[in-house]
Each structure stands twice: as structure tokens, then as C-alpha cells.
Image 1 (spheres, rainbow, N blue to C red):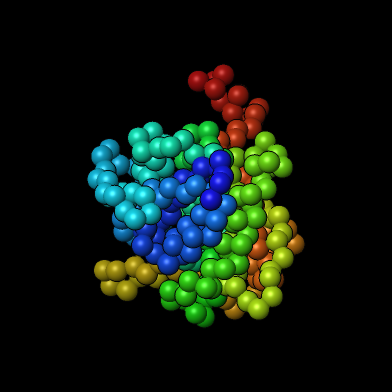
Image 2 (tube, rainbow, N blue to C red):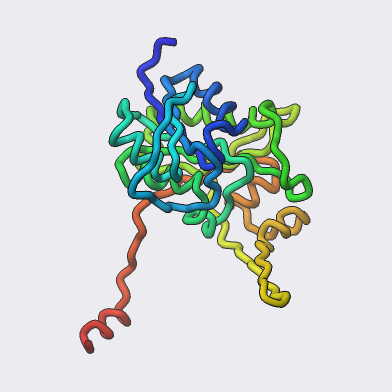
Length: 256
């Protein structure tokens, strides 16, 4: 393949997960792909980072004994070559909503890349609540792979990353017909529950349960609404935390 596009590919499910292989094979048709991914499952570790990690050669690149963020730093600073783009995924299970952005290892890898000055795309596959948990077949990632390839080929040259630091992509399981793509914003819906039974407490994310029950009341333009409607959701996001000027806080500081 004759291409100048260099991609660093990582995930949080582990380098041997089916979704990772599916995305690696799809992107290898249009780019030089080097895998720098966790050796095992690192789901929901957020931006946790280690001081030292192991590295082993893998048929796809490098298997790192650490987190997705470890993989980004190791890939960018030690293993090379310098990528044009970082892609994280394909995760088994959607990463939807504003509250997920700091929790997901898949998204956190993209955030870390953005902080390091490299544009990134995080990609996840939505598994319907009634089917969770299960490991989808490789072909079920086809829609996610098609969407990612489309964005990888066109987003950098069309100026998308002049305005967004990274994209959070969520795709449905591949069906008979291609899914449409919708630009979205992260949903702000969030509902947790905790019940105590003796010396243990069970935590439940009710946000997913409402999605599975078809009771989504998110407005048009949100990522959860797009997924509920069978669309590919693409949220353009920025990595640095924003601050807003507050006169009330100014007064507190002056009074200190």
C-alpha cells in the first residue's frame, strides 16, 4: 500500500480483542497502522497513568503492560514513528454522554493524544442493553470501521481538526443497510443508583437501562439520541478544560 498517512492505533479492551483487529484491518487499507495497545483489558480506567510499563512485540505492533494513556505516551515518545492521527478502538460497548468522557479508557486515549498535540478519534460499538454483555463477531464492527475509515481519510484534509481536538464516534452494530452519520454533542443525562445489602453496595448505571428500554428523552443532536435512532454519532470535542469568569469568585478571592 502506498500511503503517507501514519496512524497509532490503541484501545482499552486489549490488543487481541476482535474490535481492535477489525479496526486495524480496515484502517490498514488506507494508512500505515502501528498498534500500541494494552496487553489485556483496561476498560474504564480513564486517564490512569503508570510510572513504568512493560512492552512486548506483537504481530500488530506493541503490547503494553499498562493503560490506554500509557500506550499513547509510549507510542508517541518512545516507539514511533510519529503519527498523523491517533485512533482508539473499536471498543465493545458505546461511550455516550458527557459523564463517560473522563471514565472511558477508549476516550481517554484520544484525550491524551489531543493534549500531546495529535488529533484523535475514539470509536465504540453500541451493544443493545438486552444483548449485553456479549462479544460481537468481527463482521458486526463493519459499520464502526466504515465510519472510522471515512473520518480518517477525510477529516484531517477537510479542516475538521482545526476546530476539534478529537472526535468521539459511536456506531450501531452493522445491519443490512448502511447507517447515516450525525454530528452530535454529548448527552448530559446521567442517573446512578446505589443499594446496600449488608456490608456490600451495588452500583447501577440507570442511564443505560433507560436507553435499553427505549425511554430515551434526549433531544435531537445528542449522541444518545443518534444511537437510539440507529445512527453513527460523531461528537467533535476539545481536550483542555474550559474556565469561565465568575464575578462571585472574584469577590471571594478579593476578600481572602
